[in-house]
Length: 132
Image (tube, rainbow, N blue to C red; front, side, top):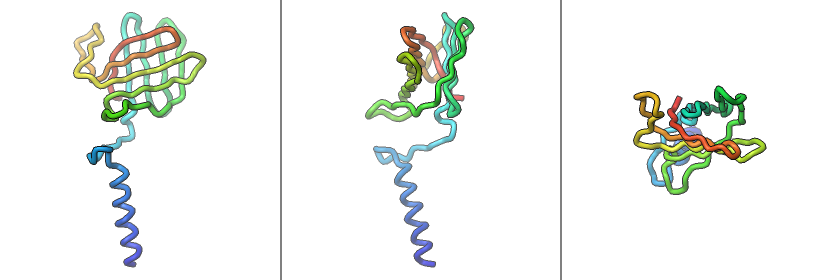
């Protein structure tokens, strides 16, 4: 019985250590922390990021679906600051979501907490993003 209780205590301590961030601060992990909606105007476009996939849509282009990939994070920065998604396809496709003080879509009074830059081949689209 003592061995069983000791094993549980060690397992709990190990899990606690694994959830610690590099600077010793615990980082909360949530199931939907990687889910975003990015939008832009002139031209209008949107990208939905979820574990099921990354979907680009625009009124003037066919919908494109990319498999979800774990985003790259900026070295030496908090994980929530910058996310870079490499979208698999024939061209170099990248979605960059960066936490900012405020981002405006230029069409409404809504302010977003993230900026978004979408690169699809030779096209660069700029907009804002929010967590779902």
